Length: 299
Image (cartoon, rainbow, N blue to C red; front, side, top):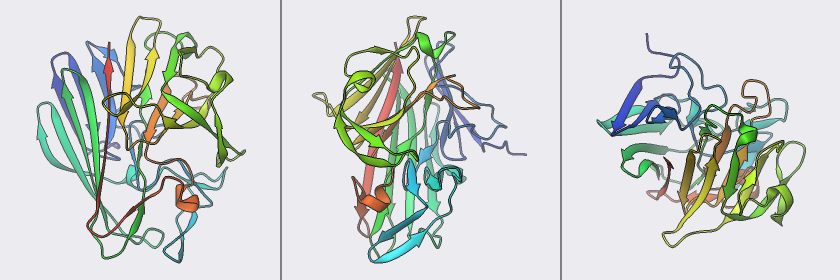
């Protein structure tokens, strides 16, 4: 029987190994020289906290699962009852198909089923590729239907602190603005980073609790923004995203089932509630495509 997380595709390149699971096109595990880069989960386990999944057609939360687009009011299922939100889109629990595979790369494809709450014709591909400079992930969306559709995408890897506690790690993020939220973790506005939220310089995670988003990423000369996690074992995990990632979410996992076993560092094309607010929302016209690339390397 197929494992709960779907078909397993294992990639390798030198001392780098990654296993992709077809439910949610999830990065289930990734190691370099035997050291975990991401927090793994078992093949026959349901991803505990969206581990490694592709989040589309919206990342993060949608208030009450309700939104209006092109004059229509639409309703998707509320999947986070405690906050009355629809969390992390629709693609993460779908079974993606293997489109192509090689020893070091795989492309998964999904024709997202149209539904009353998202009555659009969206196709997605997610390509994972290992190379000398690390793991690169590229997701491409295409509107296959006759009408415009709303779209956003994000990713949910939990990065490993190695053998030490997360409190012994140091985090740095290239972003200048923080998103303020209410008690449902829905956006209220933005403010310049300060205090524990100013991660432009490396900051210890000792005692720091985060489940927050940042915008205005600071791009390097290659058009990438970066987040860096330094661990006590001397490992440096570097996560990058291209300019289509207009936001980052960081969560230290201070809740049952995760309990600070890793830190979620999530590149996103938009912030929470974009379907309602339109903030950084992508509208794909018929035939339009959108691509976002991001990746990671361990040093």
